[in-house]
Image (tube, rainbow, N blue to C red; front, side, top):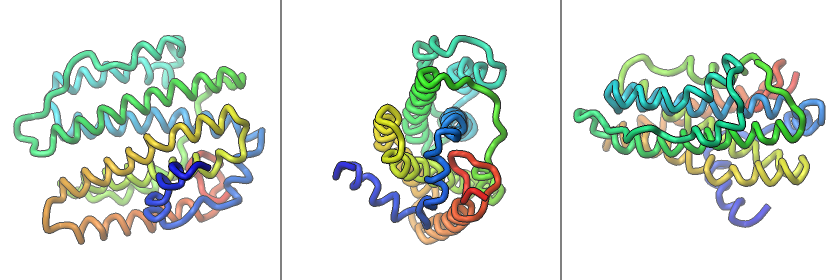
Length: 258
């Protein structure tokens, strides 16, 4: 791996409290598991876009802007949940129909919008790229059950604001950081087409993790740095447990294959 990619991964490896277990890499590189790796990756890209959109709609914009955001995601969701539409047409649908303006009473609204709109655009582009690869490898889309990973993190979110938002942003940072670390771990063990694709994702995933963390710290405000660090450590321990403990359900973010 090139020096620039190692430099990208260094802060991520320090942020995560454990590395991907070798047993997961061994399972992920088996040809029979490739369909599940790609299917779950595909769904993860959509879910990342949905989560970012939820944060903008809940915390930063009025109803009109929120509706425009929903319309943006609609064809992608229709393909996954209703199996409607031609995936080849999605490349032309990855655009927002109007500018999204922050609510006047949201002190961090513009920053949240800027970072999350860029993230959504990139996640939907990656979603399309995974569909292209699945087509090349003759892997048909089918519905799969969700992994325990995101649920295991989200169930620990506080129920009052702004702590709910801060926790969700920290979880977003962990999901993006782990994705980045896993793409890098998997890249040497797959064919060149997939390896090049995984390496191409590292830069955006690394930036997404940084954006989530920066927003969490910004929203917590000055004087609350220790509180945020405590929550980062708290979620880091949960994340590491999910990644390093036995897991009967093999997925992109699963634990040690049981």
